Length: 217
Image (cartoon, rainbow, N blue to C red; front, top):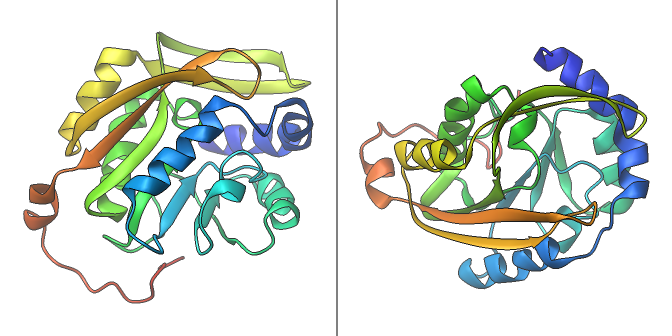
């Protein structure tokens, strides 16, 4: 499925997904650990925020939810009315460089074609501050498929595998990798990874004006 088809698929199933998945669980509890690692009053970007109940609602005030499905963002406005929201594709984030203390991406990246995953991880690195932390789902296997009937619709899933994902993260400048296995929204187990952006990554890039705190198209 191309990106427009994936976006349309999410628009079709967002309400069903929001009602069928559990907003609590041990993967949501990882956000407490993330907050402890952040400075006071952190700026956190939640990529693939959906309706916001699982992650964005548990992040500090001032966090930014990013999703490319309009239906998910409409639900998030009801669930987390105080949050800032942006409709965007994680492959090309309309956000200035080096603004985030942390990035979360729960069950999100594997809806992008695996050949584009390096681009996604470089985008995460670009928007993070030096030493900033990424918390994301770590796929366990290598796959690329469209699941028919998923949440009453269809959905695209793609992953290069666990080890290749860790290689992509390292190539994008992430280090100090820590993994956790926790329960996911649909009641099974998923592995998550914490990873910190190397300070040298930011130092090696040309500086650019930040403009607004969140620079959106």
